[in-house]
Length: 432
Figure (spheres, rainbow, N blue to C red):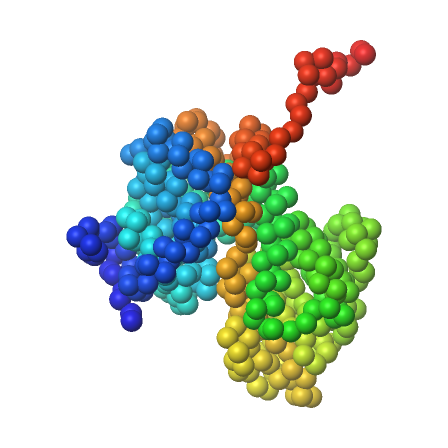
């Protein structure tokens, strides 16, 4: 069934008129609601904030637009912000990670949604613009497309936006480039750079969800095989850790000499990509850069090599190069494209080279995203209470970072020590 609700009309469900939306199928909402109820059980920090927000209403009178991966955990963040008094609209940060049943459930919860799975590039841009027609006061972005649109084709809205928060490394790189050029027209909180985000979401979340997606997509063994991971930041570290646990031999490719030394001391082999290319069974990009795996590397790969991307955009594996060197290209299984080279070798690309853990899976575990999305919610609350922040990229305040970490510990039934006054004075003194 294909019901697309125009952004300028309302849809009635159970006698209640829903906010303007543009989605695929409202009848999928019950299944989406079940998904939200499932993850809610494993997101106690966000649930606690939802209770606080329901009483304090920090977002009363505010309009929020979220450009994120639209699956159940994101939906619960949107519902939490709505409980704080906000009017909320959502659009997708990746067309293949959108789950239509979850989007339908959001619409039934009174949240405006503009997205469907498999949107074309034109539809993807249309959805972002329809969400921006909401005229947001605050935003949450994932990868920078929302901010970029605001600063290019929708500049008339810049005066309305008080600020926002960015979820991922790629988006923060784009924001910092804008800020350095003096082009960023409102303050953005770099949520990705908070310890309670990158140490858990990037490392454990990416590590688990990437392999979850690869395993469910390919149904192939990892033990005994060689995995080449390009990029050894926190995400790359997590992917490598899980690959090693699955019994793989791990090769790390890096451009940063410090990270390369880290990889070596963590027990991994370190090579240039052209030297690793003939040996690896799996190649996973985690860099945030473009054209990382190119023709020169593809031509060296063994028969049956599998390529996957765990970076935000589908530019890390050069798909035009892969098509160029192939004599045949076809989909052999959902989320698996087969490319046959002139000499008969097969190379397989997962999820169109898009973010594999969301395009071919359900993304990070709920317990991990509990912390990340709690940071997002508190970052927006911080912006509401600090209207004098200068335009540019700002770190998450330490008190918010620590608050989320402590809330998580308490939710786990754990407690930690604190410094005595004597210890505080000792650490602050230089004479003793």
